[in-house]
Length: 415
Image (cartoon, rainbow, N blue to C red; front, side):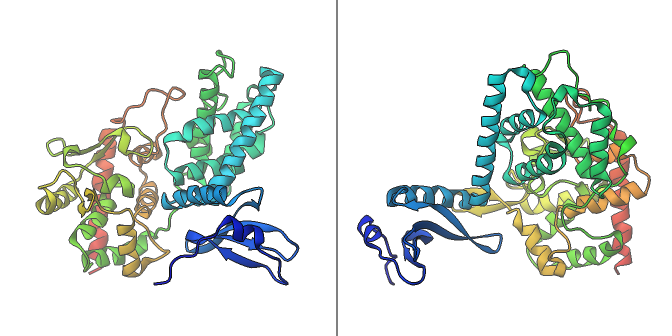
């Protein structure tokens, strides 16, 4: 096998120009691109999200070979963690820009604090323990729907009516769920400013009293691929006839019954299942919103859990797998892969069950707040009240039973 090419500083210095650009390759895809006009540019080619990309790492000799390799290694580390290195760099630049703006504001005095500065300061603090995909979603929401509309205004000068108009503008393009999340983010930003002495301690968020159900269209926008209720019977049939691993089939069925996100479901522990109370008690650290969550278990869900326990009860996890490094859990891509195999690539995801169920239950007249609570979208905090994971539990229990019964009826239609 041919050894991987490795550059030296001597080769970089002596590289001569040619009529066309050419590359001098180093290890791991790093290369020095020699341009006809004499420039020598560090470039790294990599694949992310199924697409080839090229990242600029500086100009030689300003960036030496050793420095380029360090930058390259750092970028490969980001890629290994599942994030796009160029997106990370862009975000870092924006945060540096925001910090520079913050410094300017601080030097000018509190009176010059803009909502944009406050928003990015909150974002930098908030994102530290969040997953990359979630951070990306919130960042996009701040940039496109919130900061872009009022960013240059003083936070204290933005009225409740103005925030209503901002939120309604998001809803009017068919993104009701995004509108609710944007409202939550606005209140979080104000609260951060008050708690950290950046805003007047007597100030209350002007958006705190806005009730989403009064201004936002009922229903939830679909961010992940999902089906209409009319397409569900065929999916249920294919799931029941799935010929892959039994664990995968049971995980798909349990996801359809519980509304949990993929990572929340596959990371489940048997100690979380309260058989007597018929509840799945998911602790806060395992939830996206970092708050404990209760899932009422209908008889159909309990029967399925008994099947899972018969197969995996000897371990502490619902869906364990063996790894060289020790016991692990099912990959978050397993359910998506199974759906792809069944012919639903680009049409349905595990997460899509949340949208299907939400749409169905809204149409059946279940209260929006009850549905949102069971979807763990509730963002209750100091602004809206003390968080209570048992809120609406009787109504949620009734709703989960109705949804389990609906799935049974839909399954009968597929026969």
